[in-house]
Length: 54
Image (cartoon, rainbow, N blue to C red):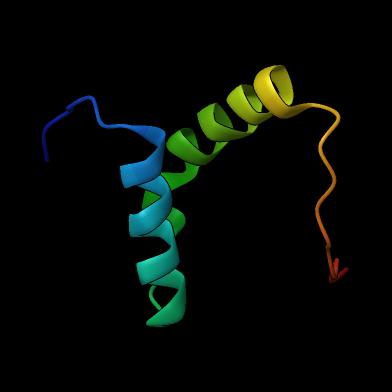
């Protein structure tokens, strides 16, 4: 595995692909945390529908 820089769009596309195929996203924990920080900074007041599972 090697580190490389990709766009948020490319990362989002890969996440959607993995989730739709039922693959794990455990491999991307650090990246998901980075995405969450970016979303908070850039899109903090945007709305999204959620269905939280406890």
